[in-house]
Length: 119
Image (cartoon, rainbow, N blue to C red):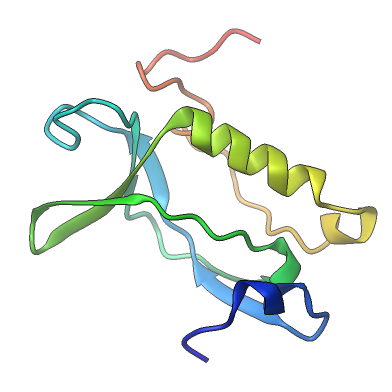
């Protein structure tokens, strides 16, 4: 299906397949207003299939430098809130369904400034 209503994602028979996009710090060329500190980027193709209940809808700002270079702009605070709400909605059985990926040098391991946060 090309579309499924948000309410249907909670149904136990719904599964969603998606391709992962990477995140990297945005520049003033990406976001002249400099209000969004992350932008999507392509990365090695990885696709996953997960239960619909692990999906949340977001509405990022679409940006473009030219017709061949379209990406989304996102804010750290929104990404952190999004991850928090996803995590809070999980139960123990959901943890087995979450795709595993190797860490990258980009989000969430770097701040928008490019600095690695001190833990």
